[in-house]
Image 1 (cartoon, rainbow, N blue to C red):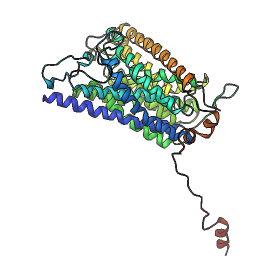
Image 2: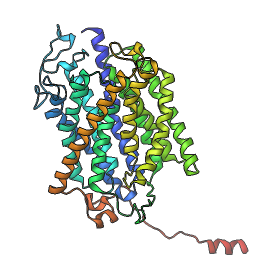
Image 3: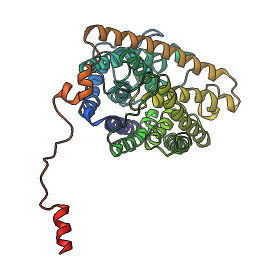
Image 4: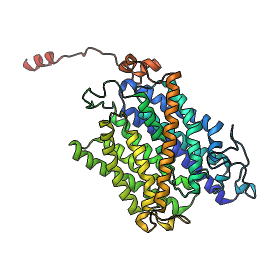
Length: 443
């Protein structure tokens, strides 16, 4: 086998495994940010969503997204993964049914697995925003819909050689394709569900509902940060030393800058450095750099991170003011900063890293690339939001999407699963009392 093909395949699969591991990160962050009475439900949703994603993407999604077809969707290779392997290891490259992926020579199944873990991430984003009031099986049903239909159709436009790609839209690792799509679908779900019981008062003010375990949330953030070193550099789908090294550094720099910015801004606005805001600041920087990570300098990535850290704090506060109840800040992290990160390609991209494409506005490229980015944001957002809202409404009319008020108050762990995450401790009478100790001291 060609050594380059071998190296590229190992790199692609290892980074895909890192992205797969991000499922644990999302599970920890979301569970930590939610109440103890719903923790089993959050863990279970984040666990089973990848199973649903795997089947939906294998059966239908991969073909819709990457199959040869029209500018709107793939029409070849539907209904179970199929087609020829175009790896150079098999001899002369063969286009097969998935010509849009011929830019990388790794085996077809390596391409499939790498794209699968990204699709699963988009579905997982929805989980946190609709947490603490959604029916378990309705969420699973929506996961099949988003990964099997909504995500891949938009993905064909962006990564499958569709009409947005033909217009020059760039999204290297998925600020729009993964994060904004998950964010738009989540926003539709939040609006269809309504806020949690007790979240807002009649005068419009919001009641804080703190999560039960910031330790777990922080662990999850670290796992996600690690996973992003597969998410962004892995999107080269090739062991290109210069590219993957630079993308690692731009990714890390944006995360660090955003974390610091979010901490400072949350302190200024809330009076204290809120750890939840710091965690979401880190994630916001990672989301924002996902689209431009391969096209910008390290200095630009730091600027992008600072702005992302400011945006996420302001967005969390703004969503609360308009009564959009998002328990974990998923909309502020993934939707708002997914849009911002996509725009950053049109602002900060440099021609040395975008061959054949226009540079960003700040580097002499004028408005051309920025216009392409705005077209992609608007078109993808409109399609995903409307399609998701229709899906949520259909589920609402059939399966129902919200648990009963009694179940919501008592917790979804018992109502949906009949079990709790944490064992109850038996209360035992201590062998001593403070009174007896005081009597002994007096003696």
